[in-house]
Length: 108
Image 1 (tube, rainbow, N blue to C red):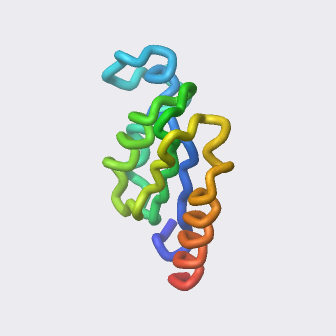
Image 2 (cartoon, rainbow, N blue to C red):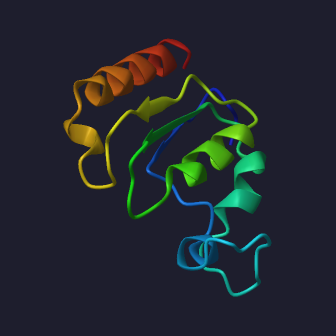
């Protein structure tokens, strides 16, 4: 996949399944079904990370950790006060998505 053909949006992402279930987990186990933390650095497309700062399901730290490991991160959207199931209800959510998509379409 070349960077001009795709873009990635991570909405309330998790670093790994084990890290959600066991927050003190520091390494990825072979049986972890979602080893996103190990895969994100291989993504060469622009990546937009969106995460609510008060996410009670997938802690905000997951979004931040993935953002920090992206090869081509764009300005993230940290939705102050948003949880896991309401982040898209905040006005800045749709505005940031529109901005990202418009920018990436121009660069195709």
